[in-house]
Length: 108
Image 1 (spheres, helix red, strand yellow):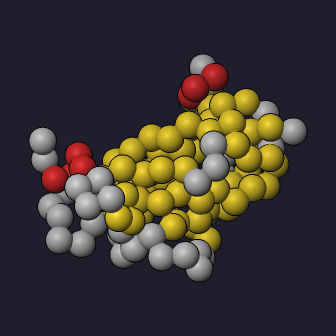
Image 2 (image 1 turned 180 degrees about the horizontal axis):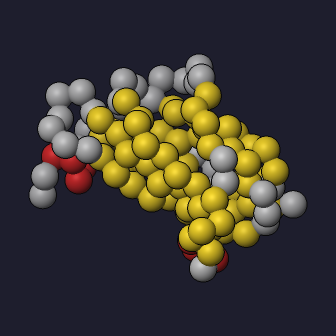
């Protein structure tokens, strides 16, 4: 198992209100059970692939976070249902890219 496979993103809340929402995730190093505070997230995508609509995308932009190891995004969850958040990050000291896909549910 490569070192990159030991990293995983985790949603702080699996549900969010439909419409404008703030999504918060943390990046964990599972080897030491600690968050990674200085990763560079360079790719992100929000779509409804879990509900069979991968072309239905939502706007997503990074937001400042006051918590170390927590990364925040302002999202437009335009309709209720299941959404997929895809992220890619560079972790200092590691070669390669950490990639992960998280599912969340937009509710009324």
